[in-house]
Length: 194
Image (tube, rainbow, N blue to C red):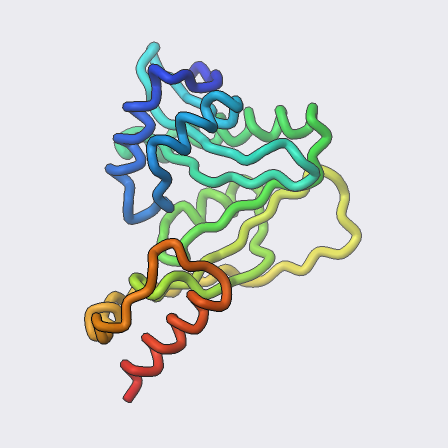
């Protein structure tokens, strides 16, 4: 396997793999990948000179985030994803990062992968109202940490029944964040518990 930073010519492949795995990944428009490829934040894995997956990470800071990681479905479980993550860990060590973090939906099999890679769950947060699953917050420390609070990762399955029953007249912008989205979630859950 060969790992390198993606180029603009890889954009079409990355976007198509993201779309094929839409239920497991957060969505980023192609323009985001275009920008992040320029900033050297998208690693591309190739097997026999053919793209096999990618890993999109944030800026090198003390705490670095993995925004997306995806390997072609038919080659999962063959350590290609592990090689991609190990490559990122090596770069992070050179950059003197302290930790790597990521978020993963509770019903996604990738949670087992992250745990096997040495990541630990440091918290569980509510996910979006469409899937009503929880989000496991995974962390990998590159340097010794004095106080580590590990929690048991959630394995809650998604439940779209609440989303289907919602009052569609009470719309909210898909770009809403923070308190506004929290209030919307309470409203959706509240109106369906009656």
